[in-house]
Structures are given as C-alpha cells and as structure tokens.
Image 1 (cartoon, rainbow, N blue to C red):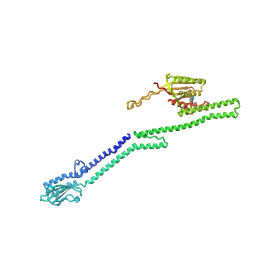
Image 2 (tube, rainbow, N blue to C red):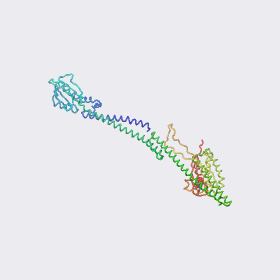
Image 3 (cartoon, rainbow, N blue to C red):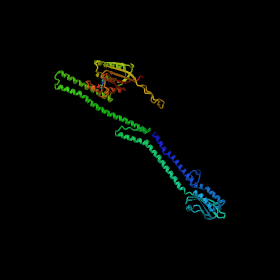
Image 4 (tube, rainbow, N blue to C red):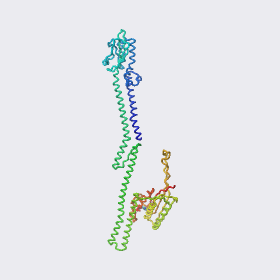
Length: 521
Ligand code: ADP
C-alpha cells in the first residue's frame, strides 16, 4: 500500500473506527443499565424507551409511579376510608417499596401512616392542610433535599376531615447508577482510543518507521564501509521503492569497490610480472655485456654471438613492452575502436593470405573454409580483429611441435535459440507486448584449429588470464609475455563476442570466437 493509502487508512482508524466502537459500547452500556432498571423496578424491558433513565430520570420515575398513583387516586375517590386501614396501607406500600417509592397518609394535618421512616427523615417538610380544596386535589413536587418526586392527592374522609396521600418517589438511587454509566462510558472511550491508537502506532511503526530504521542502519553500515549487508524490505510503498533503489545503489557501489580492488590487485600483479619478465632478458643482457667487457668473449666470433644474444634479449624486452602497453590500453578502455562494416569473406581471405607466406616458411600449411553467405558482413575494428587472428595463429605456429604443422580456419553461422515465449503475455497499457519476442541472435563463429602439442587440462581454463603461460611454455625457449590471449579476450569481448578453447594434449588445440553478424536491412 502506498503512503497516501496508509494515511487514509490511518485517518479511518483514528476517526471512523473509534466513533463506531464508542457508539456500540455506549449503546451496550445503556441497554445494560436499562435492563437493570427494568429488573429493579419490575418493568418490561421494552417499556423503558429512549434511554430516559439517563437522559431524563425525573420523567422516568414519574412514569413508573404513574399506575400506582392512579390506583391510589381511584381509592381516594371511591372509598377513601380504606386509606385508614393500616393493613391495606402496608400492602400498597410493600408494592411501592419494590420500586423505591413509599406512601404517606395524613389525616387532618396529622401523619397517619409513613411507609418508610428512614426515607421520611431525609424528606423536606410537606404542605399539610386542613381544608379540602377541590383545586388542589392533585399536585406534584420535587423535593431537592431527598431527591424525590412527591405526588399528592388531597381528598376528604367520610368524617369530613381532610386527607392527604403522598406518593414519594425516591430517585436518589439514580445518582450512583448515573455515575456508573458515565464511568463505564469513559472507560470504554479510553480503552477504545488506547487500543486504536496502539494499533495505529504498531502499524505505522511496522510499515514506515521500521523500514526507515533499517534504511538508516544500512546507510550507517555503508558509511562505515560495509557494503556486504543487503537490505531486506519487501513493501510496495514509496519506502519499499526507496529501499530497492538503495539496494541497487549498494550493489553498484559494491561492484565499483570490488572493481577498484581488483584493478589495484591487477596493477600490483602486472608490476610484479613485468619486473619478473624483464629481469630474465636484462640479466642476460648484463651477463653478456660483462662477458664482452671482461674479455670473456675473446674471439670476434664469440663477441658476435654475445652481441646477437644481447640483441635478441633487447628485442624480447621491446616485445614485452609493446604487448604491455597494448594490454594496458585495452584494459583502461583507452583503446579507440573504429567499428566498420566488414565483408567477412573478403576480410578473412586477405588475413589468411597475409599470414600464409610466413607460415609456409615455418613449414605450416593453412586451410580456410567459410560456409556463410558470401555477402555476410560483420561490424568490427579491422586492425584489432587482425590482431586477434595473428595472436591465435602466431601461437599455433610458435607452439607447433610437428614437422608438418597444420592450421584450419573454419567460419560458420550460428543461431542462438530464441528464448521460449512466456506462458502468459504481459501487455502494456496500449495493448502491445511488454516483452516482445526477439528474433534469434545470429552469430559468426570462427574456429582456428592446429595440430600442435595441445594444452594441458589444468592450464586450459587459465590461458586467457593475463600473464598466464603454461609451465611447458614458460620453461621453453618460446618467447612470450602471457598477454596475447588476454588481449584476444578483451578485443573479442569489446566486439560483443565470446572466445574459448578446446584442446587434447598431443593432438591439437581449437580456438573459437564469435562475432555479431551485421543486421541486414
Ligand atoms: P604467450 O605470450 O605465452 O604465448 P598467450 O597469452 O598468447 O601467451 O598464451 C598463453 C599460453 O597458452 C601460452 O603460454 C601457451 O602455454 C598456451 N597456448 C596458447 N596457444 C597455444 C597453442 N596453439 N598450442 C599450445 N599452447 C598454446
């Protein structure tokens, strides 16, 4: 989920969800209170509507006492003297007490019956009267002192004395209940806000702060030079993308550092190899020069031989320096390639002709087979490609150990198998293929085979490494720097091709390299 989506969700978690939960909880708490009231006041649950108990308690208590009040009123009208019967009064009062009310009967300003002495003590003074007034027959008061509703009926007894019946409805009980409701609602709101807030914090922490923290640690690690620790964050939001970019940057930095270390290592290796390879001819030159100076070469013939050796060794040094300067140019990419379209057939015919005369003088024959179309063209730097051919063919001639050496050059066309199409096509928005089927790659493969001594299996994987010379060659008189095939590999790779070798010791060696065919319009 994107951060925008997360913020919207966070907004919902912080507003809609708590509101809905609070509404549900408040409803549940009020329903519970209603049920308890219904239970306490012997009412049907459904009779308590609109949460009057909490919102309008006076009306609630008034309503629950109404039926009792009406029946007492009927008695005062039909047979008032019944209200002088203490047993009858006890019966009525018992029923009233169950709902927190009680009855007071006054006869001629004298308290005749008090249903609850305990509650009566807390009650304020009642308006006792001696004259029966028709208008004041039914009155309702609120007694603030004892939190009661008082409903009064004034009537006359049969002996013409004034009677007053007070139905005292005690609603002081509502206060603790109301506190309970408020406390429950406050607690519910507190826990709902606490839990939604905690959920939100955990979620934000997991999805935003944790990845940011990981990223911060990774930055610190990279700052401290440790590029090996990958970042594992798999979210699809902006932070996830930032982490992906960061991971890519880490890999690129790591590669760059490794390349730099490798290049430093190479430079060290090159310097050590150069000093080693230069030492041999220089020691020889020094030795032979001293021989001449010290008069060891005392005959003209000997001096001639010594000078020839010095000359040959100086040539070795020149050869080595030339190869080295070429190699470092290729390696530093300061080699300016000049790629041109070359007709394969003509180019190779010329090259083979070039070398065949030299090979003939060494008693080596060369064959050339080209099975590609005569008008096949490749994109190549002609000078550098010639260097590739020369290096391989010169090696074949140099290391040839047979009296009748033979070299075959074969050129053929190869097609790289196209990648199998995906099971499901992935389409862009405009309906075109996201990964359109590529036509198969077409290559030219060149094979240069000789019948020389072959290369030992242990040497074969290393012959393209710089300064690598098989032991046999190192210990032989064959001049070499160990750079020829390394240069071949770099040039072919810069042409977008590959080079490899196959060899059977004592039978011969085949060098293969590929070149990209120029696309025909
Ligand atoms: P060098 O200057 O020693 O010829 P190269 O890089 O050209 O260096 O070759 C590396 C090694 O590969 C050689 O030292 C030699 O041992 C081996 N090699 C190359 N070509 C052939 C070949 N045609 N036959 C046998 N060995 C070969």
